[in-house]
Image (cartoon, rainbow, N blue to C red):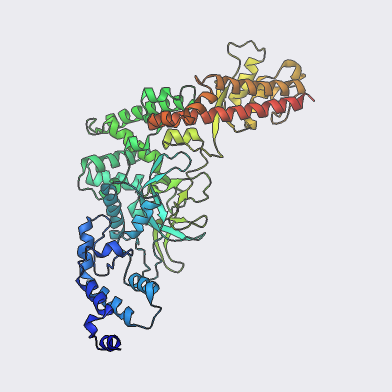
Length: 549
């Protein structure tokens, strides 16, 4: 028919296929993103588009337009799957991962946060480590495996949603036993290295018998506040402030009032007084300027030391306390079996004779999972006092309970008991014993067996003839258990609020969130102490009931 013959004679440039190709070529790049739902090809673009304005995306697209359209054209004329599937495949093949995409994934996982200054500080630390011989690349080197860790600017406690500062994450999957890092001892701050640097570079001579914590504290104060071109600046710049850590010995009186009744208050005040005395003694004996070595700087230095210093026990010259850059970014878990220690550097054939700090994975870690080590079997009171945090689930948590001889005497055996304690290396002052959830230390019971011993129980024997690890008599054992119970009840009565009142405050999320971080820590801590003591009390009541059967 005429219509069919005219259709056969239609030139190619009037065909629908040609018009579609022409439309794709002529459309401005701005229009394309509205109907293309795939990432744009960024092979030739060297900057990260995540933090760039949207106009950069369109400019980047124009650099790749011809290559992109050639791929689309070849797809339309190929014998592939055709249709939307082939279109999608072509688009995806033209895309490479944008720089910074791993970091973006960390942010989406909630494990990497913080301002650009924190990211810059992280980058400076990594570069400083690399410049000083630490392999930090995520690709294999000559006989060196890829470095498996990445720095997070901010991590969060999953139980409380409180910030826990920087941390280290698994950059890839990690297997149990994998070596996580190696830090040479020349990059660690120890008493010996700090004494040498203070004398050589700072014209400060401290006696060799000065406590190791005092030496390192004096040195890091000098390097952070008095030496703007310090070799250690990239490391010092990532260290947190006193307020960021928040150990209780740095808390204000108002904040400590929130812990009223807790043994942590007395320990915090004692620690503060000790630091003040030691600072004054060090400054007075060695001529350090008190206006440069202020108490605020001194407090910061010890906040860093108490929360980050590691005791390395396997050094060739004997154990030592050290600040270990990068390693001290790892956070604590009471359930981790991972501990930091030292070894001789080198491989199994060649040893360098130098020490290095090493860390091995105690278990498998998934990609993006936070790495943990153990700071030791510490109670929440110790963690709050020295590290500025407490754990909601801590198998080593305990509360100190005090017991002593009856005040004012009244016991005919008082003098004999005091002499016995003196010979055993104990004074007659009150002794603190840690009580754990639903149990108490056997040493506490042994002490009370002695304290409650009567002339009738002795039956003519001397105190040295008794084995107080065993029950003395039925009456003495009952009295000792009742004394433990009374000591626990006395400790509970010292708190101005009840456990139920603390729990109600925590449940009121709006009110609780309005409190300061220190106040929130205090409320959680005192509530957990009361819960623990109540469980101990219940266990004692059960044990006393069994004794009466």
